[in-house]
Length: 103
Image (cartoon, one colour):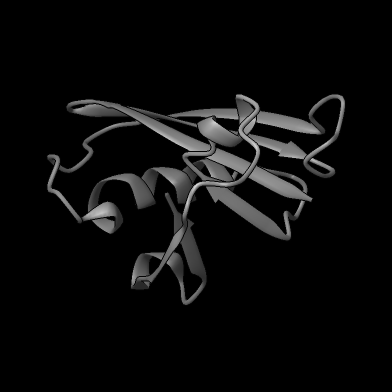
């Protein structure tokens, strides 16, 4: 299973979304979730873990399925791109030791 995640911030709030699919070619999602998050941090270049990560973890906490892979900011792949955008990996205490991939 794959979790496709994104966050839209409009300070002081953010809206995090998650679509869970069986695989990249699935005809429909298995599950969708949207979570409104208050008091997000101000934008800081390169500080994904301060602003976006807490929102993503909040929406992932509402997902019933257990995704094996996660694509953050997957809009280019979902829009029909032929390959995934380059992903960087960051590990932060907010992720509880899990790796988090972001575009």
